[in-house]
Length: 296
Ligand SMILES: NC(=O)c1ccc[n+]([C@@H]2O[C@H](COP(=O)([O-])OP(=O)(O)OC[C@H]3O[C@@H](n4cnc5c(N)ncnc54)[C@H](OP(=O)(O)O)[C@@H]3O)[C@@H](O)[C@H]2O)c1
Image 1 (cartoon, rainbow, N blue to C red):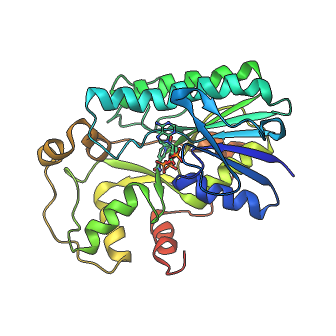
Image 2 (image 1 turned 60 degrees about the vertical axis):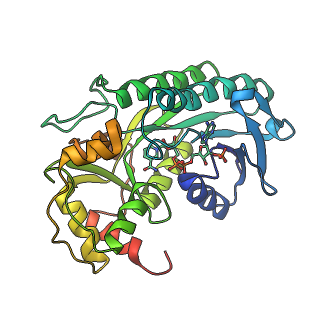
């Protein structure tokens, strides 16, 4: 049995991942600013405050904490919040690690939107960071994660859009389509990388079991936005006939955040596959079929 500490563990990914780890017989503590039940540990990275009583048990840290990228428009103030909630919280966790004598591995979430956009090529982990806001954020986030290498091996997953109807971007898109508003975004030709929640959680487990070091793209694949929206509509048995939402409208409504929807990104998943990891969802159609199953 391994004892895990998951920062941001009450969020979308943390819920599924902790469930998977518990089924496998592990002990999981979730670090949260709002503890509600047994197994939750209070912390507030901004105030550099943490409840210390279980830290000596921790074997592995899974870092998922960070203000939600898609929740609010990216004002300058929000941008600072998005960066600090990730970077400063890792630095604080590292300070706390002096009270974790058993710590053997640190793995952190990162974002696939780190390469810039609109390259015709598939981006691999060897490609450099882009120079837009998200790329800069990811660079700082990953640099903070790498600082744990002073203590233990470090793995970093560059996560694509998570396919799970219980939250995140897909939940919002499905709600729109439910009201009959299915249509492509922008010109619909831009590529969207995606990862199914179960494959993402399996990827965390794979990296932890094999103490994989370095960065890995976490994406089952990618498809055009038009195909993406059409597949969701089809699986939900909803219409898909409205004209595309123009890029300038998205930009007006969402500001700079709209780039996540309108710009194109193709990524390779060869590196994680070469470590022996296999994806269970081969294409987006199959992934969505599972998502819309009633009791998923
Ligand atoms: N879901 C995706 O599609 C996706 C894609 C790429 C990358 N990621 C990254 O993967 C990580 C986990 O994603 P998720 O979808 O599970 O996110 P989520 O549902 O938004 O959960 C993130 C958790 O971070 C904590 N948090 C929020 N603001 C914070 C702050 N200012 N300081 C410290 N902690 C804070 C919250 O925990 P408490 O309120 O309990 O403290 C929250 O439950 C995030 O860093 C996200 O950016 C997600």
